[in-house]
Length: 186
Image 1 (cartoon, rainbow, N blue to C red):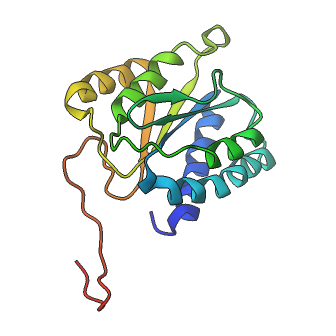
Image 2: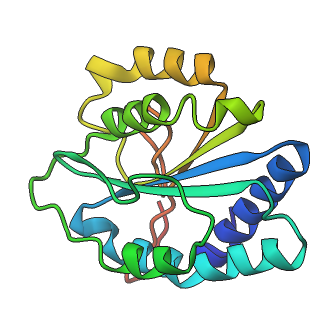
Image 3: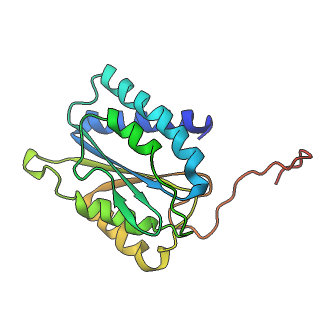
């Protein structure tokens, strides 16, 4: 999506709005805690509050809950239960500590998110579930968990979005435009 973090967050706002119009929605943000993602995490955190403010202005927050997780070598659930009040989440995202392990357990994180909240508020009817992965890697646990996580997402009817350069869900390679100092592009 063109427009950097602002463009991405505008698209996310659109996707969440559409989901909430359809039915109650749980949004799970899954952040890569590696040092290479610090700048992107902070850029997204700056726009995070605006996304939810815009949704509130459009009266698209009734039935909207949010959870935040991180991953590196380990998966960390930052919100033990999904929340309606997202104001504390901005600071939470900005304070994510860098994981220095060099490992990105993307699929373990998504699997944990889907399984943890698969039956979230089931007694209130059907819920949409959206998982936004913020990463720049395909995941070190690709070989072990890709197929089982896809199956879990299908069973839970969870839509998964991957946000990041060359971070195509489970792909071995991704291509990004690179401009060298002399202006030559690859």
